[in-house]
Image (cartoon, rainbow, N blue to C red):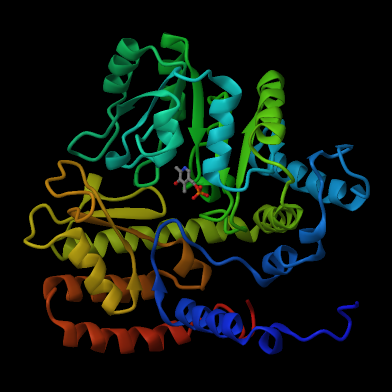
Length: 420
Ligand SMILES: *Cc1c(COP(=O)(O)O)cnc(C)c1O
């Protein structure tokens, strides 16, 4: 058999081909404002869809359990070197299949079952893997939580108080829905005071850290994880970094053979391509634009009477609270969705509704910024968001805005047709 004359996807699997086309249209016509999503470049997708999907490379560069890994070694080493250059650290493991896998490996490397961890409460903006009950992190370890105050900010004195009572082995900092800068230095002081390891999960803010637009977790955190597909704009995956040789060895064993088998070398190749994009001077402009666009969103919504948790944002996202409104986060999410604006409902400080309904939404700027939208477009979109929320049951208005925004989206084409 040879694939030389084989059919392309359109001919060999029309069902999947059509779904891919529809998804490309959906991503092009809608305004993607989910704070954890982004658009990778075609170069990154090319690496992801490459022959490396065929290759087993269990182990690490120059220490593999399979033959034929010469090219895989080069790819993984480049990804590691570029990651260390971006985050100015000594060791990087680029094999985690996802952010959750990366976090699982940190715990597996540094904890025994039942050990105590202290992380940010999921309903206050933390992540499932920071000790939440339905997650392995809440099941296998003894999890305790800190949260935010009613002003939407972490109170570091309170974190210290809790840490002194709990005496955790690991303190997890980093969040999925927190609009303010995270003070890694203060977290390290807290960790030092109670003898804990500081673990920073920068999944959401890594792209800003890479541009020096958010303080770095280094040198404060003992170990750092991130996803590569959020603000880093790379392929879906995870990564773990440290400056501590002993921790790096434990992490490597925890990933393989601890939790994973063969690394996804095609995804690692794509991570390397993404890291090269991040090392380009243009990255800083992108990251700065992400922050500028978020500020416009926050300002317009506040001017129009909406309550922004913590009164603004330092990063790529805002949390809008509807505690003082007669509609829920779920209703807002659905109304905006009808108008082609994709966001997600989110709990807010002082939450009164269930996590399935919530009193807030989270809105992010990274994806639309990747399409080239700037302050002018964000001002238009922010006003449309307010128009919809002001008259939340007006489905006619939602349809009309959807048409207008589709025209706006078409001025910011992100992919050619047939880019999958
Ligand atoms: C998204 C996220 C993760 C998990 O990433 P997945 O790739 O979805 O597993 C972990 N931590 C934080 C803070 C996140 O926001």
